[in-house]
Image 1 (tube, rainbow, N blue to C red):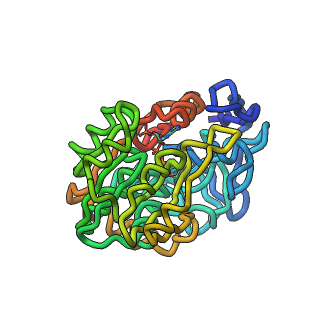
Image 2 (cartoon, rainbow, N blue to C red):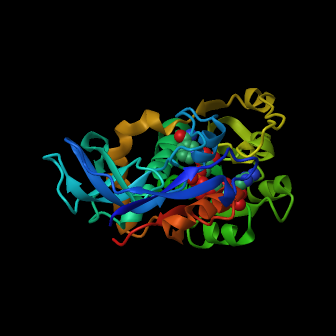
Length: 333
Ligand SMILES: NC(=O)c1ccc[n+]([C@@H]2O[C@H](COP(=O)([O-])OP(=O)(O)OC[C@H]3O[C@@H](n4cnc5c(N)ncnc54)[C@H](OP(=O)(O)O)[C@@H]3O)[C@@H](O)[C@H]2O)c1
């Protein structure tokens, strides 16, 4: 254990990121300073916001060529120079694409492996889960009996939005790409329906599943999917704008969406930023880990083994080829 493997951004991606945009290097193994922890990475989270950081368009700041790729990870403490942590402790922190890291103990958050599998703290019990939970319950204000539509429905955020909506007595309808994704959304996650925008006419399919439209639309995509959903808002509908998968890889913004639909339906649209909802995390982990234990929540993980494959896995995520929460298995639990 004398070397630390790291993956740096080599150049700004043009369009969908490719493995050649990244480079693997080794650095000497870091040592924990006073008040710090030395950790080994177990699971690394790949998330769409990283694409925004590469283009310098994300609110959390840019990643520049030569920088260590950013990312949240679950790690095991190897050495601690802080009284609150000991070797063997399991933590969640933004330690980046590397096999080992040092960080101030104050930046580490403990994870409890007795609640659920460790990797879920990056997915259903992590940032994407909190995004769904807070975005739906706090901003979407679902009411039992509502018909809730969500895009990227097999993904980390979308699959949770629909399943949490169902826990609250709503009818969940998903939009996803491949028919296999739609099948999982319906058959395993239990949505009432899921339409594939890749294999049929999106508008016709939406009208078939819910001829009267939708009470709540949780948007993870933007572009024409958002437009199609907005055309079908019921009176008093709520729209949660959460993500823009359709335009992260583009330099030119697509036209629309047309806000006229929002006005016509007297709908409320609220922007979702997960960082505003940290205060909900404890409640969210408690409630959702209970649902997990009871088998009421299902999740998909798109696992890649080895830090050296992280760049290719990230490229797959940004192409939309991931099926479920993208996780890189970096070390042994
Ligand atoms: N606002 C916040 O604080 C916040 C926090 C977390 C995540 N988000 C956003 O939530 C959304 C979902 O994130 P996630 O982590 O759950 O990802 P994910 O859904 O697991 O993966 C992304 C999915 O987006 C879909 N997609 C739709 N149009 C696409 C396109 N043009 N190119 C590539 N993929 C496309 C693909 O599924 P299909 O094949 O089914 O289309 C792809 O699998 C993202 O937009 C993300 O930025 C926002």
